[in-house]
Image 1 (cartoon, rainbow, N blue to C red):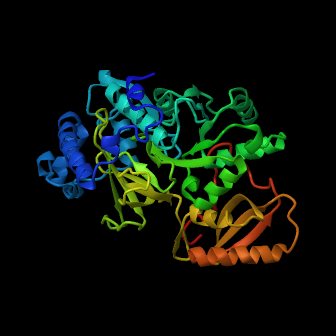
Image 2: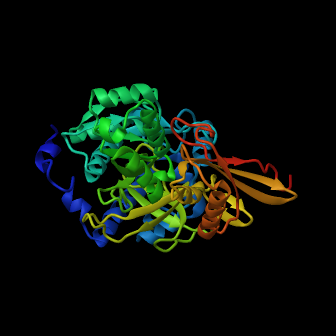
Length: 448
């Protein structure tokens, strides 16, 4: 058992009580102090940041308040790829000698060349300590048996299992095993907690039922940690998965360019607590201005402690909303109220912005559906046409046209978008064993 764990005891509510319950003023003071030092480190150690700051006419000495960070330039995924290709293998954003780098993860490459994310030994230790803190807030304890059903290769979510180990839980590095094998392991080791994606949690539960296993009765899983898709923050989706498993679902958010879980739900399941001692966040509108609490905007992140490759005002492309109100759990860190989608997943249909998560929230309201859906967007005579394909629940009987009409009306009321609805038999849509693909955009060129 670690010294930290021995000190806090399994019955204690907080992993780091003074830090997690400090005032907003104290959070801001901590971030400002760390940010000043971090900007100096970036400017001194990274050729990229020296040039970028000079081009923008700013330097670390110009940061007097957190608001002053908006004077500094942003960067995005394309910048990371370009600098990695220009100065291989790790790019000139790197701010430490390569000999100080002990671990590298990489993005999936779904938007281009996979980009490496380097860590020093201290960076890696900070990450795993935060994972332990986040697991603790979600109720994981040393007497739990935890299964890690995320990719264990270059994926940033792989090492997060070490956070469960640091906490003291028995940890099974399951990885991306076939579903039948994973269910066998869950039974064999009597797993009480599991981490995967929302769509795979649903898929795995369906697979169990097909094998004659009732996840609620025949498995011991009582906590599901999910990440990688918006579903965990959609109440209707979370509730459907919870009903299937008889387990609580906790949504986590992370990205390879920072570290694993950067935010996650506590046991109250009321938003995702942010790792504010490691990452400063901004939520900005299309003009780059801050949005109000509860409003949607793009998440822009700045690391505060990651020495290998500082990320100063990194545009994530993720659309989120937030609050700084203290949580009922007693923690005072800012919370994401939802990850609603990505800029590159966002559909503009007849002038309305629409995310798959907006549609999913409506799909999950209907007990007549099994939860699987797909958005098909076409352009007919220069006009957008949205079709929502939805699988019905097994054994559904009754007025199918009426059901389609009720769903179309509910979707229009919730999103402002009119759609044709196509009801499909169960098992019609292709299944993804991990991240689900929800959009089939067939419009091609703007006036194709």
